[in-house]
Image (tube, rainbow, N blue to C red; front, side, top):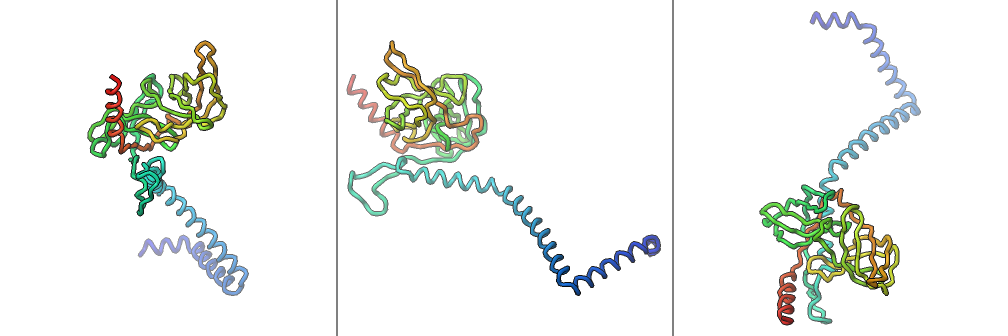
Length: 278
């Protein structure tokens, strides 16, 4: 109590000034509509700014959850594309969308390690056999082909990156449908080449390079990049095409693991076909 009295005695002028200021401010607001309106508008402006900032922070914190939802939706949409379906019964239409059966399904995986600066590069994913991943499944991103699953444990898998000497992707040129093999030849991770294209084939700079769909691993029509330039070899009567890749391998984060539900059947048929020619 003595301390309170001492404080009041020491700061009585400041306290009195504050009380008179509050009373005077209140009288002004009660008597003057203009001042009251300005005060309310100012208060609303300040509180609105505070709430807006809070909402912005909350939106930022929710971005991860939103991204996960979008990736799941993208995986579902990819599975529903015609390129991921197989037509049934020729031209006959059946009710309840049974004209097509599922051919490709997609699983979302996180990249937990990624090499891209060496001569042979690998990527590790946080999904394994417990998640349905098996060897030789394709791996893609929204920007293009990432690689192929090379080894699997229960909870993880290793992907042989496109940036690896063993990786070759069957591709085609969008303008004329001419097919070839797209391969990274080392060095710049944003470049690749298509070799042994017949010299009679017309090449257009800027043309899109897509997956051909001839492989049992990747669906057709996936955009890989565009033609930067080309050169002709008169001796071999072939052309070499230089491609600017669309995918940035240095910033891989989320990927899709592609499962071809008809892969085993197709491989068994190819094996029997090969035996026929022996």
